[in-house]
Length: 153
Image (cartoon, rainbow, N blue to C red; front, side, top):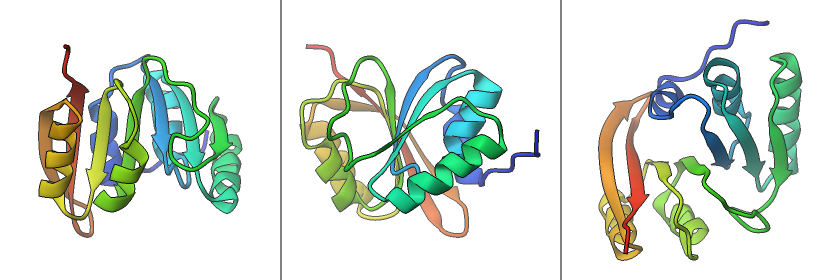
């Protein structure tokens, strides 16, 4: 296998995910996060992106690294049946993240936004999520990683 190198921000996300987890990566772009999780943590991953071009690049990387990952072109969570997966949304702004999450969701979330963190945290609170981890990471710029769990009623 070709040596897989991922950005520090993506590696930090991987460190939050338990081996064997099921992942939906929204806005997966190149799918390197998913490839790492599949190869090194035995995770089942669905890599999605709104861009067919990005998904094609993801598919090429999946083949290159001999990973077992599903891909799908879709807008956010549209046409995705949710079960107990962890939803990862990384590298988008808060406005896009809110649009994606503006439906009834009870999955754990790992979100990495680079804009309007306070607005994002208020949105999650209003959606009945508890932020269990918040961590800043510097990877060319500052990103905030948030792990959020749906509150039990």
